[in-house]
Structures are given as structure tokens and as C-alpha cells.
Image (cartoon, rainbow, N blue to C red; front, side):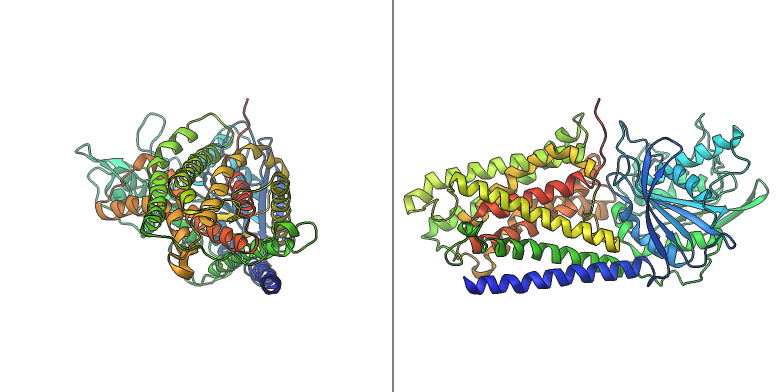
Length: 605
């Protein structure tokens, strides 16, 4: 086992080096090599709640030389870091950028309901900064953030009418994967934006927006948006498009409105709704729109983008974090306090006794994956339909619990129908564990998770960096969010049962060295198959297979990496400890924290 300890030390050093590299590169990209000042703010808004935000101040901005300012907003169930492509690229081009956490999201205050009015409060905050040109304040928001932009325009108009302000606060709006307001209160086409510059970034395969019913009464989804009356009315500055020539996407249209030249444009990148966070095409459109509206203080080609380096090294940090969990766990079982959790020798795979055993192996993997896939849409609708503080955590937690219970049932059936008759010893494989040893396992799991998340907080403090890839994010958080800790308990059953099944029952010579990957693949299959079915239909037939469950299908994208990665982590820790519960508890805690800190939270009455 000395070799195992030496290897763990080496991998621990590698993991820390990757994490440090992540922080350094992410910080360099976010600050454009140290030229842009980046701050984290906690704003007391005019609406009476506190709002967390990142503020980016380019070197050209000063009270003597105010520059345009832009508010960026994430969508539902996300946080300010999801706008990194936009805030990195806009700040590089000399704009002051305020990237907000909407109320009930990220580090902003949790309220009794999600009003999603953060954009207007962000615009008001920018208007009071001396280095911001108050005549050139823009806003952009993705999905729910786009809806918040529309609310901001309504609030801006109302403030003008009430005489609260002499001039409007917001001059330009880009609605990212969100619809504009096309009609007035009476249902007639209208230009509620006035002389502001407005753009819609309409993903060609958006799952939630840009839908309409055509003249024949056929419901059309986003691929047909440009043919619809809403898109055409928008480009015609709120006029009824009947009888007018069809206007095109990716073309800027201008018109004199209220004595000023106004812009209307619809961008149509061939992406899905959440891919806009991760798209060079979408980011290019954002850059080009605000350049057309305000003129970029620092001229840089829209194709010259560096945010991808941030994303790449956020992922490097995520890999380093996974390695750290394994290496640190293994080294801890070499300490006097936890040495009784260590295996005497590295665990070797068992041999499958006969064809019947082989059949049990394959069938248990396949049936587990099938059960998980079949119940997913049903249980997610049940969970998210409950009146709870975190509907996403409830839905995914219930799915995890049912899958865990099914896994336990499968192991019980296997043991009594085949395993016990063929000499399977639950204690020998680590499935049977004493109470004292279990308590030590729980204690060590908490230590590993606390130290691991400690690294995330250190990285956030020094570099404003975290570990993420696309919609999967391990980030620092404000401690009050831990009031939602009971939802974390819903993940324990699955991740512990999955580790026991993967290691005590399915760690054998099937697949050779790739046995762990084989197990991980089957655990991940439901999260692979369901999105494939949804998007093969969408791209092929131009409509979704499960339109009503579009949000729930999207949640599976990060779960692919979570399920695959957690299974590999379980196997690595088990081989050194012969303890399937340690990795299972660690993964359950990590996934639980990840879930409750990356969603929408509301206070319950």
C-alpha cells in the first residue's frame, strides 16, 4: 500500500497545481491581463433587497471620461457567472459591466417570490456611477434575464411618465433567448421600446421562446420564428406586418423614432437555448449589437474572443477538484485516525463465476438504466410541482432517491438469487460495515468535502474563479443558502447505493481495465438517451418530442458529467479502501451542495 500512498501524494500535488493554474488563468482572462478592475458588490437596491454583482471597470473609464455601461443577467436557475462570455468580452472592449445575480439566485437575497426585476435595479446602480455615461446604459439578459429586461423597460417608462426621472435610464436592450414585448395592453402591435436600440438573439432551436401560431392555426416553434408575425412586427418597429415585405435576420434595421435613430435586429445563431452561454456566435452578436448601439470604446473585432480560455481553465479546475477528492481521501486513510478505513491491499476485481453471473451483471446494469430513464420525466413533474423552496432540488432529489431505492432492491435480489449461493461475502467486499467504522466514514467524508469546498472559497477570494463547464458549476456561496440543506438528504440514497453496486457487486473482470468506465457509462445512460431523443426530433422534425418537459431534459446535460465522474471517483476511492460508503457519501454531499447553490430559492410562508 506504500505505492498507493506515494501515488496519492503525487496526484494531490497535481490536483493543487491544476487548481492554482485555473485561478491564475481565469483571473487573467476576466481582467484582460490585469487591465480591467473586477469587484464583487453587494448592492442595496431601490426595491429593498440586496443584490450580488460583479463590476468590471475598464482602464479608460473615469469621472472625466465616462463610458457606456451594460447590465448582464443570467436566466432562471442560474447565476451571474453564467454570463462570463458577455462580461469578459464587453469589458475588454471598454464598457463598464455589471453582472448581476437576480433575486433568489446566486448570492442575492432570497425572497418570498422570484420577482426577477434585478435588471432595472442594476441599471439604476450603473446610472449612479460617475465613470458611466448615463446616456449610454444598455441591458442584456438570457431567458428569464431577458424577461427581466422587458420588465426593466416597463419600469423605465413608468418612471418617466411619473416624473421620477427626467430622462430614461436604459438606452439599449439585447434580449438573449427571450421574446420582446410585441403588443400593448389591448393586444395590438406596439413599439413599447420607443427610440431605444433593441435586439433579439433568437436561437434557431430555442426550447422556450419565439413560438407562434400561423394563419392555419398550426403551432410553430423557434425554427420558424422569422416567418411569424411577432418577428416581422418587431423588425417593423411595432407595426402590423400584414402586407409588408418579409424582413430578414442578422440585418440591422434603422428608423427615426421620437427624434432619434433607433435600431431593430434579430440574430439567429443555430444553437439551442442554453448553448447561448457557451457560443462564440451568440457572443459575437452581443458584441456587434452594443457596438452598433453605443460604439465600443476600445475597438476589437467581434471574432476576437478570449472567454473560451476562461471556460477551458474553469474545466481544468473542475478536473483538478475531482482528482483532489480522490487523492486527499486516500491520503487521509493513511493517517492514524482513519487508518482502519484502509484496505490491506489494493482491491482487485472479482472473477465472474459463470455465464449466469455474466447475465446477472449485464441485466442489472441495463435494468437499472431503463428504470432511471422511464421514471425521470414523471418524477420530475411530481417534484417540481410541489410548493417547496427549491423545486429543482426537490425534483432531482426525488429522482435520485427512487433510483437509489431501486438499486438497493436490485442488489438484494441479486444477492439472494445468485450471489450468496456462489460464495459472495458482503463483509469481504466491504458492503457490510460496522457501526463504528461507518461513523468514521461519515466523519471523513465531511472532512473531505469541507476541505474541498475550502479550496473553492480560496479560489473565489483570490481570483474570482470557480470550477465549471457550461451549466455544471461548483462555486463559492453565501452561508444562508445552507438553510436548504434538507434537500441534500435526497441525494444520499442514490450516490451511496450506486457506489455499493458499482464496487461491491459490479467490480469484476468484465471489460478488464475498462470495467469502471463500463459501470459509469450505464449509470449515465438515461442522461444521454433522453436528450438525444429530444434533440434528434427537434433538429430533424423542427419540433420537440417533449415540449412540456423541455426544462427537465435540459437539466440532464450537467448530470451526464456528474453521474460519470462520481462513478469513477467511487471506484478510485474504493480500490484503496474497500469502503464503498466513503466515496458515495462524498459524492452525495458534493452533488447536494452543487444543486442547492445553483438554482432558484424562495422563502416559504
